[in-house]
Amino acid sequence: MRGFIERALNKLDKLDSTQIRTLIHDLASEHEQMQVVLDSMNDAVVVSDNDHNLVMVNKAAERLLPLMPGDLAEHKMWEIIRDEEISAFVEEALEAEDSVWDVEFTLEHSGGERTLLLSLFPLVRSGHVTGNILRVEDATERKSREARLRRAESLASLTTLAAGVAHEIKNPLGSIGIHIQLIQKELAALADDEKERIQGYIDVVNEEVNRLNKIVVDFLFAVRPMNVELEDEDMNSVLGDLLEFVRYELDESDIELEADLQQDLPKVQLDDKYFKQALMNIVKNALAAMPNGGTLRVKTRCRGDSVELIVEDTGEGMSQDVREKIFEPYFTTRDFGSGIGLTLVYKVVKEHMGEISVRSEEGEGTRFILTFPVPQREQHLLEWSGEDSE
Image (tube, rainbow, N blue to C red; front, side, top):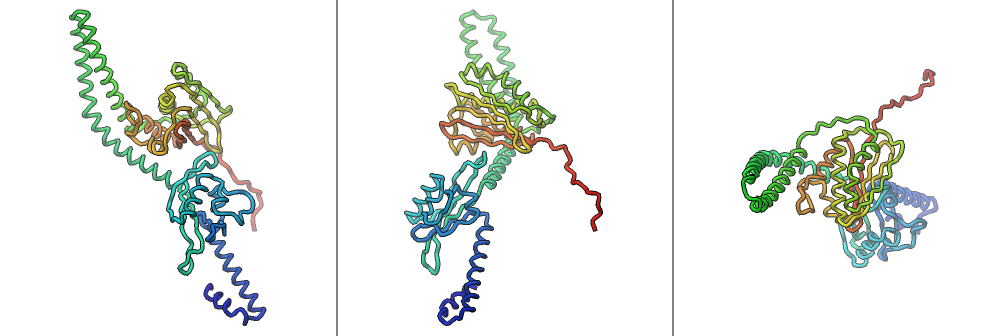
């Protein structure tokens, strides 16, 4: 079609009015078809001319990018983008005449985060650059799948490691504990000054043995199949018990507790024991992130067919690199951490058929969002009028 139109344009002065109308109709049809193709794409496409002035924007761009309202014509490509970071990136790349591929940006979107991959490259026609194309891919789901796959692989490797740890470490630790008790009995026959000095050494050994034993227990708990017994529970009631349990420790750490629990929350299926253990691990992380005090906020809310639990602290926050790894086994930023706590949280949430996400920036605190499905027991039936269809 394009070749035909180009030949017709070369003979435009020889065409009659009917042929010109046909040519214009064909041009309009081809332009409409191109626009339909662009608007049907999942990737955003923004096109500019050689002076970086906007030429066209497809529907996906309007959906994925935060664009300026109103008429976008006669604006530079970067001027139509409301996000300052993306706008600055596009302007810098265009001015430098650089081609860039799959640069990642994270945007807040509908209460969550959206991961975008931006590519910018020249628009070439007949061997000449006639403008630039900005392509934007929504990689949110793909990144989420990759993260889930990494966690599944890590848990699989943890299973093998835990079996070896249990065999090679737990039994020797038990033997060490027994012999420490025997030493303590022998101390009773020594003078008080000698007893006190040696007891100090034994206390250190006991402390380290207990710490190692806890690590082994955590590893075993992480890999053993969970015998989850789900029952309809009022999440607010379960949370109330847990928050009352940790209130003294929060007060001692100069941490203020703010609870915003939505009333008339639908019941969800929980295993009281495992749910509390998962929440306790998140609270412990929050305590560690606020060594000088702060605020711990706990919020519940109903969103559609699910119940959300939000646990937020005003602590040190995390970098993006740390945030992407926190659910992976063995990963910890603490000197004496086992790297298992949040892995257990992830596993418990999954056993409850839920989802967990985290938002955090360095110096701005951390927010965990746990989502649990509301059981759907009502059957929705179509109404029948009683009339036979012909």
